[in-house]
Length: 198
Image 1 (tube, rainbow, N blue to C red):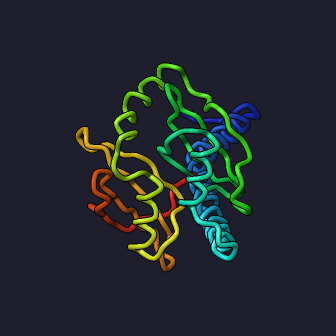
Image 2: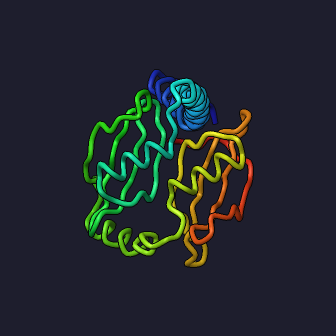
Image 3: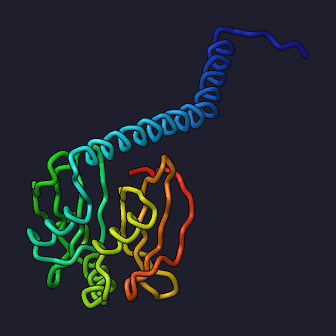
């Protein structure tokens, strides 16, 4: 049996080749793009940290200012290129306080855009930390002093119903993950890591 190529066959063949190329190579291009994005984000974060250090802007002080402005207890923070986002637990709500990464000043206080049911769960989960002996701010100061580093994100983590603070910091061009016990301020975990997607 002989097979004759027609214009329709050529068109179908080209379509299949193009589709196959896009289908199989697109994820590789996407991963390369994500890697470049994460790498440039890591570089820009290092630049922000260096600028904050030159300006003598310290994360514990910013969290203290955010807690005072939002009248709540910090349960997390994240440093981005221009903003330090501090998440607070206040009465029966979760709020977010944005502070400038260049001046340390409070810029905005708002409620995060999440479902009420999630807020209720978060509130119930983190309410025990209102009476914790060590605050998130103190835990960050402990980790920074112990590792001679600069924290760029921190949050509360749960391991088998045990709450603790997980702090990520940059120390001597190395990313460290530090676990601090909120009951006594002891560092109970430490490992190296990489910049995570912010």
